[in-house]
Structures are given as structure tokens and as C-alpha cells.
Amino acid sequence: MSRSHLTCHELIDFLRDYLDGELEAEERARFERHLGLCPPCVRYLETYQETVRLGREAFGGSEGGVPEEVPDELVRAVLDARSRRS
Amino acid sequence: MSDRGIPGALDETALLARLRAGEEGAFETMVRAFGGRLLAAARRLLGNEEDARDAVQEAFLSAFRALGRFEGEARLSTWLHRIVLNASLMRLRTRRRRPEVSIDELLPRFLEDGHAADAAQEWKLPLDAVARRETRDLVRRSIDRLPDSYRSVLLLRDVEELDTDETARLLGLSVSAVKTRLHRARQALRALLDAHLRGSA
Figure 1 (tube, each protein chain N blue to C red):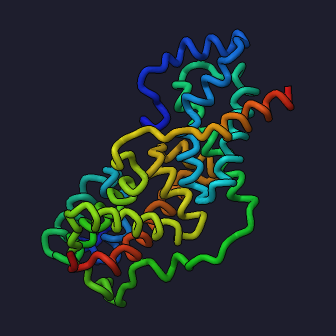
Figure 2 (tube, helix red, strand yellow; figure 1 turned 90 degrees about the horizontal axis):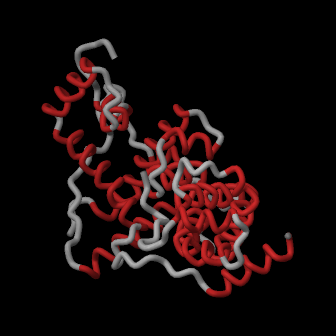
């Protein structure tokens, strides 16, 4: 990444490094210059971040935040298995 | 660090002492206190109730056997969470592979000059409760369509909230492989969601 212009391809390849703060200052500056000039890459970055958020929420506790119950038959199965093995 | 698997009122230190003393009932207390959260984590990885329950059972038994090696540097809940993830991953590796989409088909395509072949569009996410529930279902189904080796990395990093090193250790991968797979998995998931979410509300 030594040339002055980053392509969209390079930007998208380095997106995770950018978001995780793993780019060197100079690379980061080139990354941000590209974003300043390229609305489709900005939209890609936004929808990428949205993807991460939606993934987290899809399984999260936002359905009321109630802790999952453990089924009684599973508790019994675990206790039985333990007494069989000890 | 993940908060998953931490029940509110339970005193983990006291429970650990009871477990180590071999106190009657302490094992059952542990199973009841953590079983639900562990089952949820196993279901996320395995997507199948029977496999998930088997993984939880294995996890509790191996935790019980390994209690002597638990140093107490981590929380009991965190330690159990890692054990159930490991048990689920072992099960995932041994079960029959399902037909899956190729990750390459879901990665962005570029023209020779480095421009994206398909310019990204904005997403319009629904605000009402019914449509949001539909989006949640869509996201779960889409994650489920990812190839196992990518789905596992995405779930461990973005959903179970393990760090890169822990994910690498659990999956037997290098740190750089985890980073690459996570990025590809997110890009593939983004492509699957994009078909439904672009420009519409």
C-alpha cells in the first residue's frame, strides 16, 4: 500500500483492519481520503458495520432480555450422566 | 469480555467453593444456574436442539472433571461458556456436512481498475416491531447459510464476543486466518442481507 491512491478493491480488503484500528497512520489517512471521494465505499462501510450489529442483535437478549431457562429434562440428563460416570 | 452466562444473583466464588468441597447439590446448582445460557450458545453454533443438548451435557461433565484445573483467574461463567463452545465445535466437526453456498460467490466483485462491480447502496432498516422481527429471522437464516468454517468464526467473534486469540485457539487456526475469515464471513453475510435490505423499507 505505497501508492497514493487506494482502489475500492483495496479499501474493501482492508476494511476490517481499518475498523479494528490496525492500520498505520499513513495507510489510515489514504483510506480516509478514498472514503472522502467515494460514496459507494462509504455505503459499503456503513452496511458492513450494520451487518455486524444485526448479527449481534439477531441472537442477543433484546427479546426482553430474559435469561434462557434450562429445560428440566436436560438438568436430569446431566445429573444422570454424571452419576453414571462417577 | 462477554457478559453471556452470568446470572444476576449467583455468588460464583461461593458456588466454586461448594463444588470443590464436593458438596451435595452444588453440581445441580451449577447446571441450573448456567444451563440456559450454555444451551443458547450451543444452539447458536449447532442449530439443532438434540446436538445442542448433547453438547451442554458434555460441557458440564468435562467442566466437572476439570474443576481441579480451574484456576479462578476467569469467571466460572466465562470458563463454562468456553467449554460449551468447545464441545459444540467438536460436535460440529464430526457431524455430516450440509450442502453450503461457496463463500466466493458472496464476496464483492471488482472491475480490473479496482472499482466495485456493483456500487453499494444504502439500507433502509424497518422500524416497526413486526418487520424488525422479520429482519432478525432473516439475519439468523442468512448466518446459517454461511459455510461452517466461516459461520463459526463469525459467531465466536461477533455473537459470542470472544477475542481473536481465543477464537484462534478454539478453532485451531492462526490469528491471521481468523481475521481473514471473519472479514470474508461479514462480507458474505452483508451480501446475503443486501439482497433484502437495499433501498427498501
